[in-house]
Image (tube, rainbow, N blue to C red; front, top):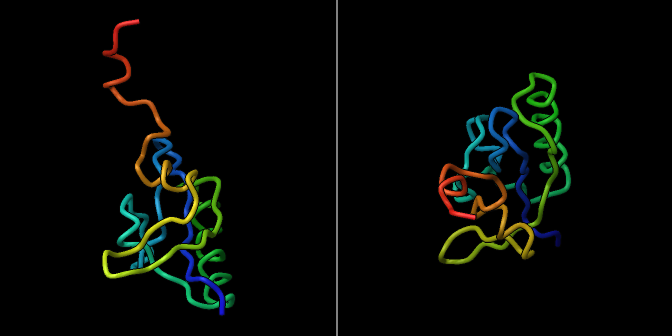
Length: 99
């Protein structure tokens, strides 16, 4: 049985990591991502995300496996944990750090 998955991307406006939500919007919170439990559902999410790419809302779209437990949805790889924590883009805080 395949692992559940979500579709992730980067919002084109600011580069923030986002996830395709149940209502078709993009959310920064993986807990609100729409889950795909089959390969067919994953392909449907990818097709929906491809439209958002065409509309220049997001870039770098891809599905990723997740784990689900009593605490919610969790990424499986270190890379995706870093992305989910939104530590991959510069924020104002970075500019305030003395060099």
